[in-house]
Length: 183
Image (cartoon, rainbow, N blue to C red; front, side, top):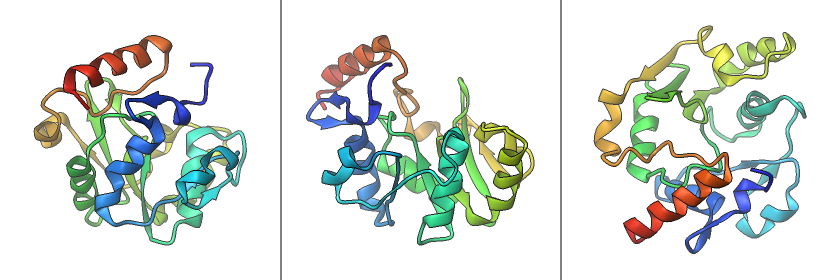
């Protein structure tokens, strides 16, 4: 994308603010993982730098699970502008005794919109120690509940939940969708 996605504006909010707004009704502790906390100070949320810089999203998950005040985290990428509170509540409730809950969409697993427990830490550390930084790499080694579309489609009638913004074209499409929705 070439720009800081968290601070991209979509409607009246930034992408990160839209994601955070979906979490507020859940009344769960919210922390941010970012190597530069300066641009996020106005959000009034604790910001932690990666404990293992350069280790990608898996390193971010390691940090979140290590510093979070609870035994599980709802991991969300900052570029999920159409994520909803009811869907996030569903993910949290689906965890049960599993180590993780990860939805699967037509695009594959969505590990950056999932719930993970602190019991994943040893597996994450061993995956990182092998030089593998992909979240999907460690999922086969834990008790992960994979939620197929039939389990969550009621929360996504327009198939927008996992719309993420990786290119300027994705961003433009999201702006058009927002205008169509009137949000």
